[in-house]
Length: 113
Length: 113
Image (cartoon, rainbow over the protein chains, first blue to last red):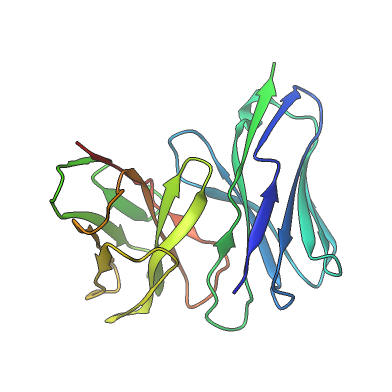
């Protein structure tokens, strides 16, 4: 089955800096890669996703890149703000069947004012 | 509240007791999932159900049981066989069998006293 590794487990940046979180996956057939943000005590919420037919997707200050050959994908947050502080989870799945998401272990991002 | 409701928000269990966590959705989603969240462990799948009256074990099903008698409801019972039940439990649902756009509930924090 699919295995998703996520690094780093914690990340601390200064406000205005960029943050990068990286994930690797094991199943070469996986083709859907979402990212979730979970604020303290709240539910995870989808912030961006990418499918394997594209290499990069942007949404304002966040972007995701995908390298299918190397089987890794990354979340990039630019111009970080204190409200970006949260735990971020990557996930992977194989669409087209009844595959469920497999999550990474999460990255706790702290943005210092 | 996002269309998927978990109750209670906090639950305390004595040693040897079974407890049931509720998950109800009004999104007309077909698939529902239960995850356990521990610090540094990410989201681990307990059980999932893709149609009524059918469910599958996830990665950590031992000590848990579920039922899916109605499309809207997917309750999780934490039995006395679960040796370390203290955790944050998240329910999620998706349309059809797709892993696109999981909607999560707000979670139940279970503590053994």
